[in-house]
Amino acid sequence: MRVDGAAVGGFDEAFDYVVVGSGAAGATAARALASTGRSVCVLEEGPAVDPNAFGDRSWDAFKTMFRDANAQVARGRAFIPGIQGRVLGGSTVINSAIVWRAPDDVLAEWAALGLGDALPARELHRHWDAIEKDLDAAPTPPEVWGGFNRRMHEGALKLGVRAEPTRRFVKDCRATARCLTGCPSGAKRSMLTTYLPQAEAKGALIVTGAEARRIVVKEGRAVAVTGRLAGPGRPAFRAAARRAVVVAASAIQTPQLLARSGVRSPHLGAHFMGHPGTPLTGYFDAPERLWRGATQGYDAVHHRRDGRFKIETIALPPEIVFARLPGAGRRWKEMMALSGQTAIFAVQTRAWAEGTVRERPWGTDIAYDLTRRDMMQIRRGLRFTAELFFAAGAKEVWPGIYGLPERLLPGQEALFEHGPDDPGCYSWILSHLFGTARMATRASAGVVAPDFSVHGVSDLVVADSSLFPTNLGVNPQHTIMAVARHCAERLADRRPR
Image (cartoon, rainbow, N blue to C red):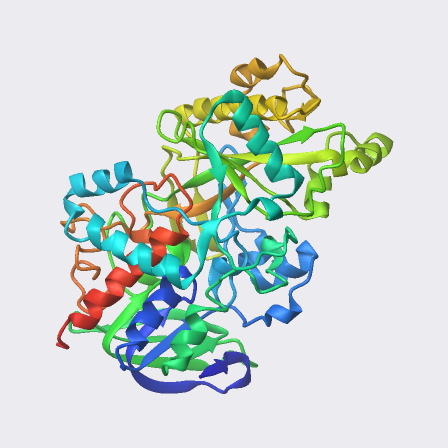
């Protein structure tokens, strides 16, 4: 059953499990818990958007489905947009459905921290197998690559570097390059069209427009979630939890909710990590049909370990592409006319930086500053990206970086490694967020215990990427889902207190 919070006048009901958040973690946990036959309530702050209503305009998508209309930023030497979905299905509705299992070297890091039993590789691989079967995971087929994905394939072959078609949760992709604004064909296997309806079919109640403000803790146990609905007058709601509250609200919202609920730890809201990314544009002498193909269909992982970066293709809506073009006035208009002959590759780095997330009187405050090591790796990644472009036949590369020429020609790739080390000179996005309620064996080292409960509070469970103890280094949706599924299975096996 699904309820629009904007249309009801508040409620006060009890369930076995209350899940806060409906994205990759929340939907996965809700489906697993509902499969046990117990009652489940899913609380989603954003609206439910009918996939038939997905359009192709960025602003329409931003104001409807993105956190703060895509104006959320992390502040530091650069102000970096932090991309998050705020809609039923969470960020799975607006991302590219990329499938990456956590690499073995990352799992080894987690085991070295004493979390090998809490996050066991064998169990995670079992969950990954099941999720990939559920959501039709497969490499992006050549027939939907389009020109821009094919260019990375060609460049990688010429350089002899490791690159491959991106694995995605997609069935029958129509190559519309519109993942960012919501898949118009329903090919993307987001939580909106898969696990959430399946959880509903098993009896889960899904409430949209429900902002969780506080988890009620009595005698050291989480017993309910309270908050406000989106309707007139913002009526209150209370969802009592007989067995557990599962927080799956993201690495930004989870620490704020826990802090408002009385959780105290020096690690809460700290150790904020992510994958800052910056793009380059390659210009070719033939049409590339930038808006025809899989949004992100190819990636180069050759330097994932030795350089802590990987390169991804990406198709952006025209209005965003135009905003990044060099020049002004008449020259900018001339560059717009050339945009159909461009491709965009983006560097995604496993940054060393750690920041903080705090709730302030004016709202969410995200502090995050790239380190000198991060900037060195970014510049190295940009040089490698330019080399890929030129190997693929690009005539020019347009950096969009203050301090570098507007256009670079073959042979000038080394300029990137001597480029500015000030992050403010670059164009960024920050995605794939982790770590603000990290798991640790002791309360002195983290927020979440190895059994997924918050240290010192029973039946208050965290199931999202905020518990990740280190930066993942690859696209996290698949790992988030496997961890949430593992958490839910353990939770369902527990006897009620």
